[in-house]
Length: 141
Image (tube, rainbow, N blue to C red):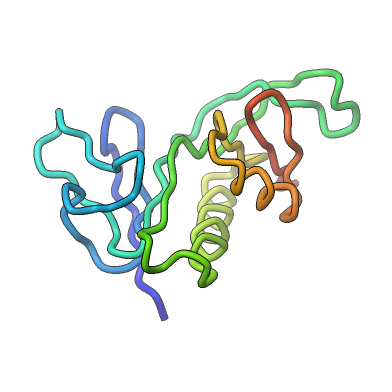
């Protein structure tokens, strides 16, 4: 069993879900770095992390993707898995934990905000996300 922990308000209303044991973010090899320099010593997981916020977000309508609606969303801003844990199912595990948290927060969807990594786009499409603009959405209800 892999440890996970929620760290609230890493910066403002941004929260962090860590996977694995806590470690100092300054030694993370994930790019971009999970370290928030302006908050002093920040923590991440030795396997990985996902930074997120719960907010209202414009997303494609579930029934008509050409229209936009405002939903309470679990918005993934940044996520990463340490190099030695990649391609071993940990990213999927982290996203499953995000989905469980989103349901606890009573969110209607999970949004990946501004996806830069093409591998994440491929993963998102394979796992029930709808790509739109530079984002992806998965409806939870």
